[in-house]
Image 1: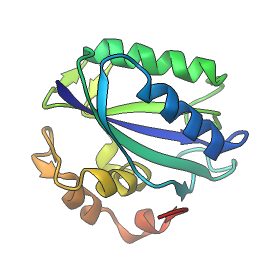
Image 2: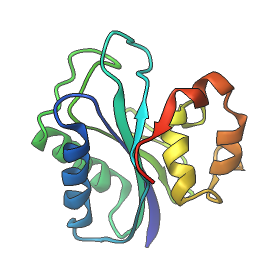
Image 3: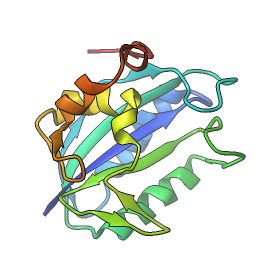
Image 4: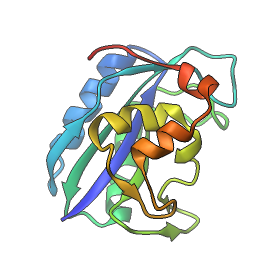
Amino acid sequence: MTLAVLSLGSNLGDSQKILKDAVSDIKNIEGISDFKLSPFYKTKPVGYMDQDDFVNLACSFETTLEPLDLLHNMQALEQKYKRVRLFKNGPRTLDIDLIVYGDLVLNTQELTVPHPRMHERAFVLAPLKDIEPNLTVSTFNTTVQELYEQLDDKEKNDVEIING
């Protein structure tokens, strides 16, 4: 079993319902157990700013799935929820990123883990610190909590918990 961490986000449609339904779908995938889920966060968009705020959350779980199998399962879920990639950082019904897969360090065209920009993103780190604050991220040799604390205040101010 390997600990996997995902970041989920949505800003089109009923984002909280889409995320709740996607989490339910993830929990039902064979080879996933010991599921942890963060609260929902309202977050400002990154990159392309002319769009609605996002709803984000993080989840972690133990899995027997190989990293690419897990990635392909998440891409299939994005398609189930009608994700359309119009342009980078654009609005989406569902975005799922594989953030960490155990201690694996992988950088291929299809998958990079740990996620290369996770340390810059409060919308990833704020929810993640709620469920895995002491997780050490291999490429940074730093815990999630420490990565969050290193973010600048403006980045932290762009995320707000929705429920506790």
